[in-house]
Amino acid sequence: MCEFVVISDCKLEILIVMCSVRTQQKERTRRNIINAALNQLSADKSFASLSLREVAREAQIAPTSFYRHFKDMEELGLTLIDECGLALRQLMRKARKRFEQGGSVIVTSVDTFMEFTEQNPNIFRLLFHERSGTTFALRTAVAREIQFFIVELSDYLHERGFSRDSSYAQSEAMVAIVFNAGAESLDALSQQRGLIAKRAVTQLRYIASGAKLQHLG
Image: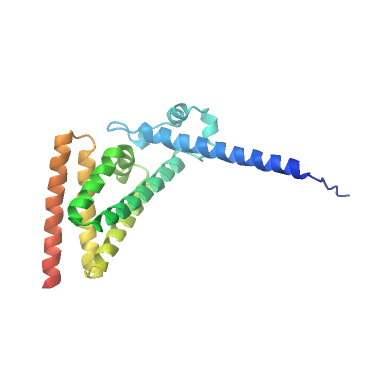
């Protein structure tokens, strides 16, 4: 015989609040784990060299608690890459808004990207290191995020009159130059960063000029 338990409105409200608090606490711990992993990256330490215990200690949780949020370190890495990819796409949109205010598209793009690498060095370190890392799943995820970046730029160029093929070719070359400049600037001095950015602008202008000539021809 089935028994039905009647829960009063007051008790139900308490249960809902308790569930909400647990959910928020779980999300905070998950975010702490993500930040702990990012904070430990450096020029000499890639994500692949991080241990679960190191991340747990930085996040101030027991190693066993890690598994309540991520299956393993690879899943954490994939989550980090997803977040980094989102940051890159937001970066592209930020640059587009700056374009609308006038000025050089190329200079604005490079300045925006260099600001991003300076303010978020470990996000870029993750993408740069894992792009050629030892874990296939992470390499694939980084390649996918960079591809999204290329496609967004390609769509922007196509909207400005270039053919699909020309837009994509320009985007691939431009993204390669900007990413290389970003990687080189990570541990550079302020003066060196300026020279790296200036060189990237020159290289991008060569690509843009060549594309325009081909388009007009």
